[in-house]
Image (cartoon, rainbow over all chains, first blue to last red; front, side):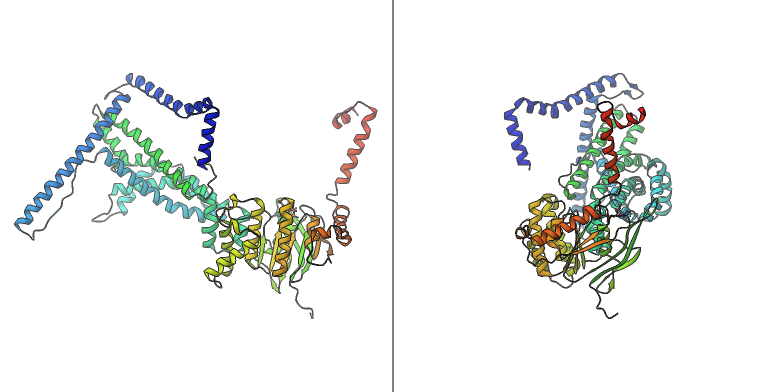
Length: 328
Length: 297
Ligand SMILES: Nc1ncnc2c1ncn2[C@@H]1O[C@H](COP(=O)(O)OP(=O)(O)OP(=O)(O)O)[C@@H](O)[C@H]1O
Ligand SMILES: [Mg+2]
């Protein structure tokens, strides 16, 4: 397929080089012009905004801060490496003196860098999203297959869907601190709180879309299933799930987008380590470079959100049986 | 009492569909019996209730009154011993031709056949409809006729006692259709299962059937007439074209459809009114529209 289209493209190029060139212009040059225009307006606009923390950062300042963040990260890594080296040496000496000495390896407790925060955020969002999907897809299938259940749950779903994470958060925090008590918790409370808030907010699109996809399976295929007397499980695996896959993925992509947005807010308020906390800390810091650093975070948050969606799209392409469908 | 039980029997079947304006009686007093190995066609105007009859035998619809017996047992749910070839093939689009047939075969022979036997059986059935070369293609990669053939293979592979076919060749071109009709006759001769087929095509009905059931128009449709086709088998479409007996049967079906059961009762009136309108204008202006004429009067 792709071969053919490349050939077509080439022959089209030779037949009509200008048409081809104009298409290339459109697909590359125009977005580039858009980007440059945006940077220009940003630069000019930023200069005229004076905040208590100085001038609003323009593109150049933001670029500088991003380099700073990378530097800080590298420095922190070096420190960590040095710390472990020192510890190892000390332990080796100890072992030389008394071979049966008990050796303790203390973990490094430096300040997490910007990139550590990104990693934490990604882990939290994926855990929350996977938890939400593991609840929403099976629940959506059950609700979608049974019109009575659908009628019973639909109003509830519609009610909870638009609730903002900020409204859930205090409740979740209180419930987590009341219920999640253990001497040696596997996860930090703030992590559990953010996780549950993310799940609660991102559950609904997957649930609803799965239910709609499942209930919309064609009468013909249902008849086939009945004539074959497929049992419930086979019916779901062989007929319901594949025909609902496109809708399920629509839901998953919406959910992941919401999960990512909610996570930043949850991290800010629950003080869970992550990008949200980074933004909050910079805000509290109030140094002259804070706004620039926050702006870097904003751009990175946007970029990661975009990449997460692309990943889902890629997954959908892998899983989808209908290769001819246009996915975007 | 002393009569032996019929193979397949519909007795006094009525069916009411619930609609917003009360129940709609689609079928009334349908009585039909089928012998084992018989090929029966159902013919009638669109919307008269042919698919409904088929769906009752399939167990997909429940008769409101009366019922359906297969070998003495009441039919009240669908099952693979009454395989259906659906009008629009109804293959699962995410499975290949092979997998589509496999799903049915596993369901029916999952316990009695080994893996290798099942594989052989699936391939055998696909080759019966000449689809063995495209086994690994998905439905969107094959033509309409090929999809229909896979649908037939899937039904055959279930080794059904009764094969129910809802306009199986309706959407096909004449050549493919002729080819599939010939294959169907061959396969049915070998397997000797009962076939009930819905068709709109008079030639197809006469060529394939032992009996043609002609249905009256709905609502409350019923069996209008039954025509026995006593033509020797195997039947050859070319030889039959000049056969007076064959043409006589064709003529009888056509007479039933276009004289005894004209499509709608309203149509003769419509024809008359248009005729009057055409006559009227020549006294007045060249071509006035009907509404204008009414206003002027
Ligand atoms: N599920 C249903 N609910 C309500 N009415 C129905 C239903 N199924 C069929 N009918 C009605 O019953 C009548 C017979 O329908 P049926 O589909 O059996 O016709 P048909 O003879 O198969 O027509 P065609 O040749 O066009 O396929 C029609 O008037 C149709 O509107
Ligand atoms: Mg029909």
